[in-house]
Image (cartoon, rainbow, N blue to C red; front, side, top):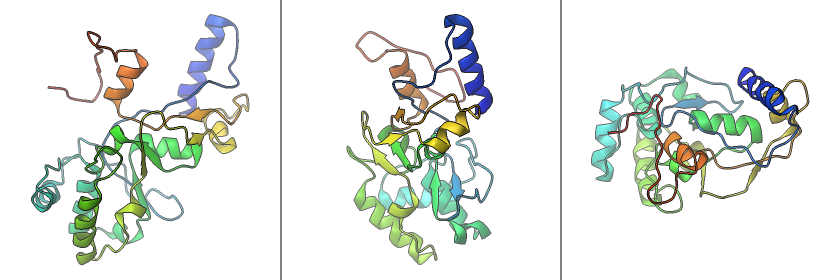
Length: 220
C-alpha cells in the first residue's frame, strides 16, 4: 500500500512539480466478495479467501434454499457459513468480517463501512442496506449452529453513494505515507466494487458511455 502511494506521489511530482499534502477526496476499491475474518483485536484469523475460492458449495446451496434467493459461492456470507459448517477453529474468535476494500477503508478511517454496491457481494441488500428479513433468518440458522454473534455486529455497515461519514485519520495518513507529508482529514467515500468505481472514475455514467474493467473480474 505504501509502495503504491509513494509511486503515485512521485508520478505527480515528476509531472507537476508538487507533492500532495491533501486531496479533495479518496475512494478505495478492491476485489469484491471474499472473506476476511478478524478477532476483537483486529487480528486476521485466516488468510484472505478471495471470490475465486469457490469452496462454499454446501453453504451457498443451503442459504439459497433458506432465503429463496441465489447466494453465490463467492459471497462473504457463504464463506462465513461454510466456515461454521466446517467447524473451523477460528470461527469462535470472529468479531467481524470484511472485504478487501472495506478493510483498507477501515485502516484509513477507523470505520467499518462499505458502499451498497460492495455490500451486495457480502449479503443480499435492498435499496438502503442488508435485507433485514434475510438477516433474521440467517441469524437463526447460525445461532442453531453455535454462532451466537448477530450478523449486524459481524458485517460492515452499509452506506449509499455520496455518503460523507469517514475521514482519513492521523494513523491512516501514516499508514499511506510514513514520511508524514500526507495530512489527515481527507474525506473518504464508501468503498465500492470495481465495476461501479470504474464507471465513476472514468466518468462513464451517462447514457451512451462505457468503460472496460480488465482485472480479476469476469463480466459475461
